[in-house]
Length: 244
Image 1: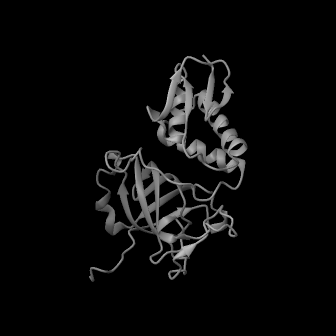
Image 2: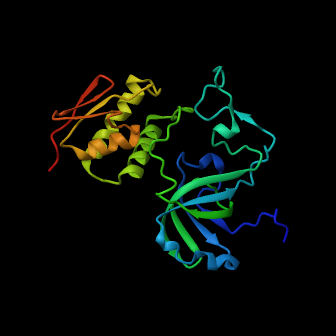
Image 3: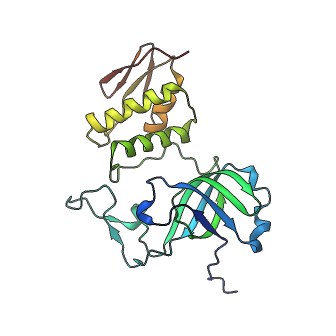
């Protein structure tokens, strides 16, 4: 076989069959691995998360090199972005990339928690997510676009928290609500140039949530204090009494 030949290893099964119906952060889906690649699944249970690479067959715009990302005002002088600086599906080779948690396996069927590929998308590769290589906590991004609604913002904040420190503690909701208000009402959907956060030392779930959302660390934006208040860039948020 020609070394330049691309062979799908499987296919996506999802309830999402229309691109416009896809939630911002994807939906539960499964990957069916083709029988000839079954041996490649040996010891796959060693890993909790995977990179899924898909071929976006419904995207013909392979000659488009600049786009206006979703959530960016097309009239803005900074609207255009090169396709290599965003995750647009329009690109020279329509390869999609998404990280998802493996929730179960039934033979050649792998179930994942959240995948942003439509039903029928060919899967061209599956790679384990390595915490020792892929997690770059110090990485940074300038904002590209904005959530369409407060609900979308809340969903984004929760996803960031869960990927840093999974928790269903009530204090997690407190931190998300504080950050939602700060981002939407104080910053008017923009990102501050620098985070300055003072968080209560005796509320670790609030601290973890704020770290997960903002990437602040002790000595670089985060300070712990014995106070029933969260302060974000000089804006104070009293917090309720800790739930036992």
